[in-house]
Amino acid sequence: MATLPNSLPHLAASGLDLPSGTLVDTTDEGVWHEPLLWHADETARPGAWRALRASARPLGLLPVLVDGGRRGQWPERWDLAPARMSYPGDHDAEEVLRGFWEDNAGDELGATDAKWPGLAPVPEGGAPDDPDVLAAEIADMFTESPEGPRFRMGLVPARRSADIPAAIGWQGPLNHENDVARLCAVLRSWEDRFDIRVLIIGFDTLVVSVGRPPTTLEEARALAEEHFAFCPDTIEQNPPYGLGLYAERNLLSQSTWGFWWD
Image 1 (cartoon, rainbow, N blue to C red):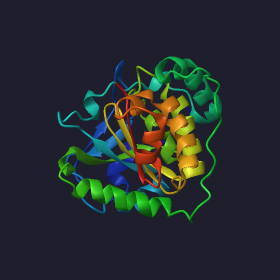
Image 2: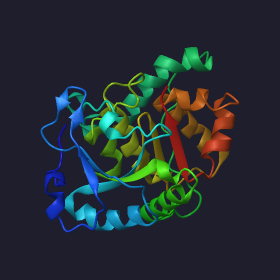
Image 3: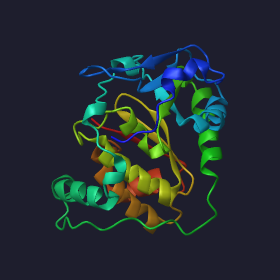
Image 4: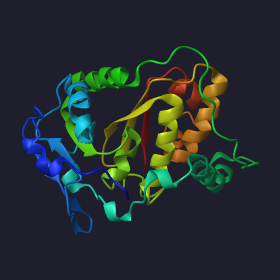
């Protein structure tokens, strides 16, 4: 995968105001030739995402909240596989989604016609929020919540937020897609159409903030079809089952989207 020059090996001399932390270079095939990410050793504090977005971006580093889950499973224990990842820009988001839709929609949704419906439109209603300001506000909400101790601040060498999973060789969606760069191509498309930011990444979970969510049921339903293709478990593990209710309850005017791969 094509990457930016990696500033993580020189983090101590970068001038960034950081707490004590850990550089992660452990993969499922041994030690990687350079760090894949840095994460703090302490719980993330409100304001940290915002501060690092401003100060670390000039160094080619992007912030992300790392979710250790209820088991305290931090990235040193994740099955990272950077050598297996391609480059997100080499894939077409609609082709990726179409393939997943055609493979899964008939059997798993009971659709008689599994023809790909096409990409959801850019939402028409309302001016979009500033995606970085919104992401910072939502990051603070998570860190201030009762689940706050699960989250630590992380830094990843990546060109854009959508590339963060591929940049670290993340294999959270392993049972769905081995090359997460293909899913990052979809995240890039959502970044362009819906102003998403990759906000939280866990062992097999992903949360994005959404600066321009759908504002009509028609827009939300079209987007729900993309979500099903991207992560079928998101629909099937969110009872009551069905794209229509998922669109209404999870997508319409919602500022976060969450995904979990079983």
